[in-house]
Length: 391
Image 1: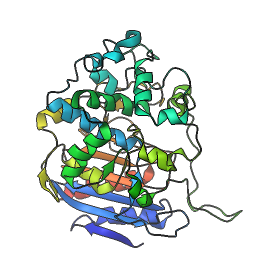
Image 2 (image 1 turned 135 degrees about the horizontal axis):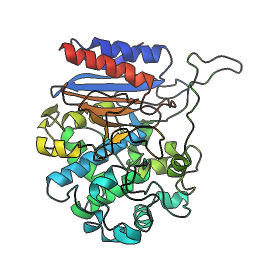
Image 3 (image 1 turned 120 degrees about the horizontal axis):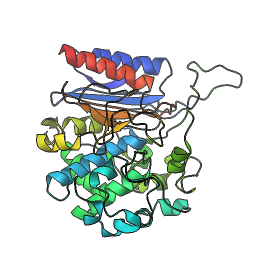
């Protein structure tokens, strides 16, 4: 399988795992990037941009990464904390007074970021047009009563997380979350991470899909696993009162252009891997050495907030959260001690492993049913971890 990009000496095993995913048709098109000790050691892309294989998937390709976006938003919040604009321990209503409605006046920033605020959907119905409107969504969320007692458990805020965390950034910094990410994360890194994609870049976005086309009666080379049963809460979280019930919603240009930062970030692997690297070490970029947060802030943003072993009300499995980041727990692709990051629906994943001094990102256009344990990403992460351990 031909791919393009860079692989440093000692890191070929990652490229071999990547080639395996493409050659065995587990991936259609994908990219993977690894930073180690602040330097890029892997940055490759290959396969096809589209399921009809009409054009190649290259380093210039951009990819929607679903909930992998949440880690970018969590980093933006941490940068506001570092600047003294926010505190994880303080109530959200201190910065966003309208949020205090319906008994939410004591919800802390930490509870909000760790999915303990009971706001995984809004009260009442929504139209698709309302979902795309920032002011409508934050007002509706502020006016929604918690769907479970705050702090009693946690339930994955699949879409709403982005508006909740993003509005915090806007309230204390003045910039909307898409602009903050561009000016404070993406641009310093010399990368491309978009929440609110400029229209002139739309042609570079590879559409997400569920697999290769095949002739009637043929057997797929890698049979799809049945989708796991979803809880009533998770279905509600993804539906958002019907507002997200639009066919092909995440391949629509108007969705890409909007700010839905819980789920619609568009990026490439190198940008995401370098971002995570820059949370724990000075990282080489086209703009020189960059570190996004100090070690003190990094420690604060990665403190686990959910109880060990607690079952997520929406996901219906054990999942642990820090300040917007997923932390190691059972059935997680990145499970080494000290790791933090986020995966996205369909299989994308980006994270930091400070103990190995590694930032990692995998993006792809073929959707699979496993979000946090996708075998493609597990294969790549295990290869990268072995290479880091040997270096």
